[in-house]
Length: 172
Image (cartoon, rainbow, N blue to C red; front, side, top):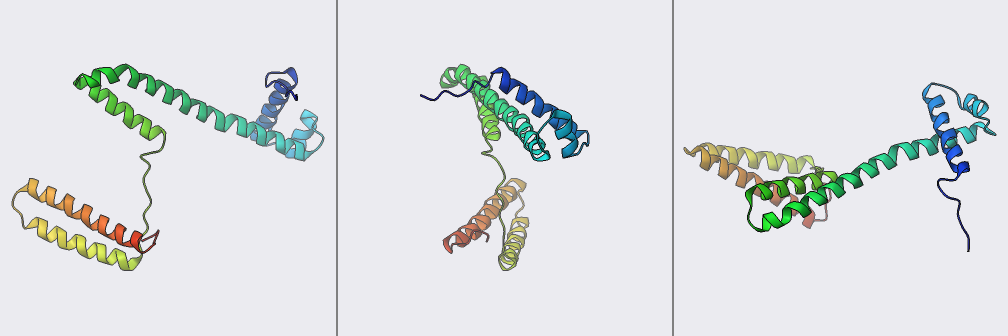
């Protein structure tokens, strides 16, 4: 059975520290060869590899660790407040909704979706929106105008996007 070296072995800790020093030297403007000479790497290529390893170790894991820790904390909040939500507690409902929103943001579920439209479709959408705007402004009641405009705009976008999807277009 093959055993791998521990992440916490003295050799690995020393190598990690050497990579961190290489990154600091590079950030200070030192050349690859100067870094290799200062830290006794065999070549400038070894200095490049050390800096790349240090960057991977310092940039990705902390963000991933923070995301995982935050998700864990938000999950604990849900676990605490969920029973009260089921009992129709308004404060619990507010906390659960806000927590779910934070989880969605953290996981990127609410990220904006990029939609591209060809000019010919854009002209049609603009014309339909102008017509909708004219129709809406004929109404006297502001609440009715707002509602009709929201429904009409949603319908226009939905129809344009669905027509493009049905034709197999990814950028309408």
